[in-house]
Length: 334
Image (cartoon, rainbow, N blue to C red):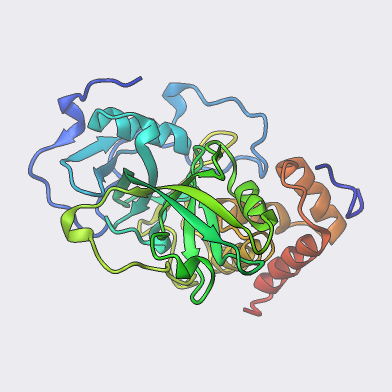
């Protein structure tokens, strides 16, 4: 297919899940347990039913609530929604209270955001809903300076604020804030790329309203407002010797730590997602790299993207640039 023709319950906490008097180290969470199912699935993973419970990776991860809690143990999840449910079960709260998770830090650090992969020794910190706030913003420029991502379970939130931008001038808007509504219209359940498009299409020169929910913070976490860190190619996704790859479609798989090619290609594709669409999404970028790494030309790549990610309807120029970025990474030109 040529380019341009693409279609557009809350359970009580069980004491067995909690770990008594355990100190949190920088990374030591995961890898106990047997019954691991290694290997990779097909690139798209589309249409695959969830694996039987006895075939799911039996990996145990340690977790805490980011604002402070006992340490819990979770296992038996294959995607982000199941992960949130497991965390909620341990801490006796609703999964809808969880905004996002970070790996190996309780801070709101967007470089440590849990995406599609978890190192087998990573420690998971869950950030839950805190203060709600409503703010009026005058769109004085075409671009607001916000980079949007989502948690894989229906919540879009702010990953970065560009210095000197319209959003940067509104000090109540912070990195990590969940965007709950725009001009009174609830957007919970809306994907990050759609939220970015809504914000971009707001008329210049007009004032609009955002309803935001910030992550709950412990007292010692209250610190000067952050714009979010810049993307860093040196930061590996996981600290363990392997990673658990979570997929929105299809089963989770245990894989090797990403190669240098994969890390560089994913970083570049993630940069292109931000440039073209105003979002960052390492899981989406990793999927695009996986789809494109063995394709022979841009049209073949575009057709494979349609089969795997047909909902996105990427612009032709973006597809060409992604194809070029994957090729550059293969040749070591980054």
